[in-house]
Image (cartoon, rainbow, N blue to C red):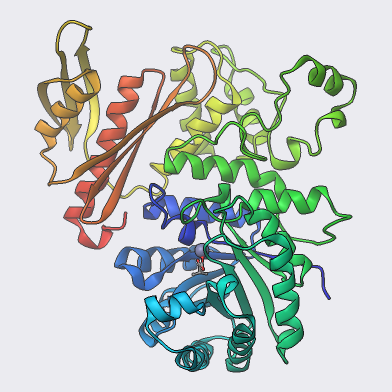
Amino acid sequence: MDNRIRIFDTTLRDGEQSPGCSMNLKEKIQVAKCLESLKVDIIEAGFAISSPGDFESVQTIASVVKDCSVASLARASVKDIDTAWEAVKHAADPRIHLFLATSPLHMQYKLKKTPDEILEMTAAMTAHAAKYTSNVEFSAEDATRSDWDFLVRIVDAAIRAGATTVNIPDTVGYTTPSEMQALIEYLRKQVPDSDKAIFSVHCHNDLGLATANSLAGVAGGARQIECTINGLGERSGNSALEEVIMAIKTRPGIWPYETRIDTTQIARASRTVYTIIGQAAPLNKPIVGRNAFAHESGIHQHGVLANKQTYEILTPESVGIHTNNLVLGKHSGKHAVTDRLETLGYRLTPEEVQSIFEEFKALCDKKKDVTDADLEALVEHRSIKPVFSSVEGYELDWFSVHTSNFTTATCTICLKKDGEKFMDVCLGDGPIDAAYGAIDKIVQPPEHTFGIWNIHSISEGKDTLGDVTVRLYAGGRTYTGKGLSTDVIEASINAYIDAINNFCAAVRIPEEASA
Ligand code: KIV
Ligand code: ZN
């Protein structure tokens, strides 16, 4: 059997559909570009039929991405499959991914269909997808709680009808490594033409076993792993790409498999996704958490100083983390900043470098030492905004807040738009509430619910940059805004203005509603 594992990334579908992780079009494109640099084999760009916004993002990603296959999810229905194909058909290597549940629970209560009907749908809908392309993936949803012999019939029907990849999802994170390995072995043995398709695993992390289950599936003969950056995904998430990849890399004797992933892009992809969803990695998150390579205790430090391998099984550099954290400051010139950006793995145009350099200089006036994390934050924020931004709106001109612990906070704010200035003032429960009230008075946005305000620090020290994310909800959609500043009130104001601009643009131009 060949030892090449295909990496199917579903950050933009399973990851994005989980609460708090929705992304707009430009953010999805940014993630897709990171996935392409990582060299995943397949990007599941979305679920084209689920909304016009999803359709547009799948279609856009299909046209932007050149070096990976691009897939759209579809239920086992003609309309879903036709829409999925319409969205991906211009991709360099388009894939239709259809799914149908096969467990007794799902068939009886969710689909209200008999096993024979499910079998018939599997054959008919896979054949329908195969009329468009030979790159068809069939997923037996809730496979790990399905009857094994029924699964044999389902997989057999899918392969006969033209599926070239057969996915065996652990939809509810219920299976165990030994069970997963045995199930894949069983299917490969019992399905007559099993060698005509690549077997795939898609494991959820409800019991914290997703990575182990995925690797066990591979040991059983699966040659595709479905996973997400940072393990995003429904409920407790999916198998984390960075974990499965680094496990394979670190233990080749146990898992003698090849992938085409460029592991040095892992940290960057992780950071981009966390920045977009407005979260910081949990400190102890494997591979990408801030403590993943930190050695605090004396015994550990002593060991690492003597020989890194005493407490490090993989190097930070192998995942793109640079430990020689060179500190830049106001005397650093453009050459030093450009050089550092290149070392950090950014390939920027001269115009982009110039604009980051200007932001860097402005930051040096507020912050003595500019670290790699600060530079990375400047680049990440910049790439979420102007590069793909078609959204024009309000901009902060100036603000003034008065706050204390014995009076009501007040904010006076001045915003600019199309060369005009708008000023208002508002009281509030603290300076941020007052500022947001003043912005609302100026912009008067359509009805919405304020979702989250989230802040995390980019580096250490009292003068750290604060990274603020704001989410607004309206009409079943989420509108995200980002702000970055050493002044957390300024960062909060910019994040809110950004979210309001995105929201107002979507209302103005309904087809941009996904953005
Ligand atoms: O978890 C699952 O079963 C899925 C399928 C749609 C592949 O996400
Ligand atoms: Zn899933």
